[in-house]
Amino acid sequence: MSMRIAVALAATIGAGVLMTSVAEARPEMVGIRGEYTPGTIVVKTNERRLYLIIDSSRAMRYPVGVGRSGKQWAGTTRIDGKYQNPAWSPPAEVKRDKPNMPNVVAGGSPRNPMGVAAMTLAGGEYAIHGTNMPGSVGGFVSYGCIRMLNADITDLYQRVSVGTTVTVTR
Image (cartoon, rainbow, N blue to C red; front, top):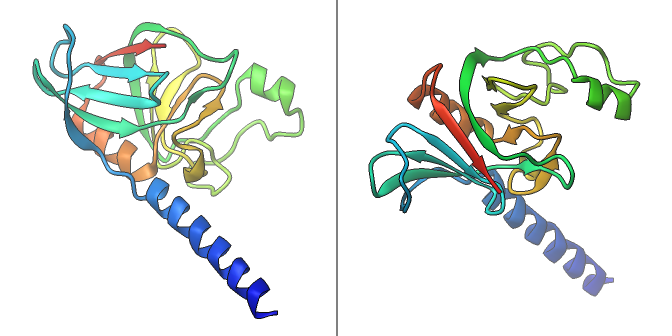
């Protein structure tokens, strides 16, 4: 009996440590190579990281969730809108896959997958946004959006403006 309790306790603590390390991830200053203009956002899908370019050799790095297999994209676009506590309407593809989903989920709702803030990207139905599922950050999880921890999207939101260039690579 005590062995079973010890195993259950160890599993619970282990899961808590894993969830804590993901949920408490913070942006970090890192070195970066490339010909990026300061202020540009670079998303490296294969790394599941977003970089905000500070200067020719430094960037702020954030963990992100990215498009799952078949939902990834690459290219350059711009932020065309910034929203705090946005309402969310599922795109047609999501609605097709999940027909019971409501047509609109109110901003601030715990069921809203956009989290506390979103920055929409020009030319598509994609956004860089927070999440109501922090454990998904770091995975291949979305329909093409870039998913961030709520604390991280709040930080990035304050650092960039509408018109910021966003480059997504695979």
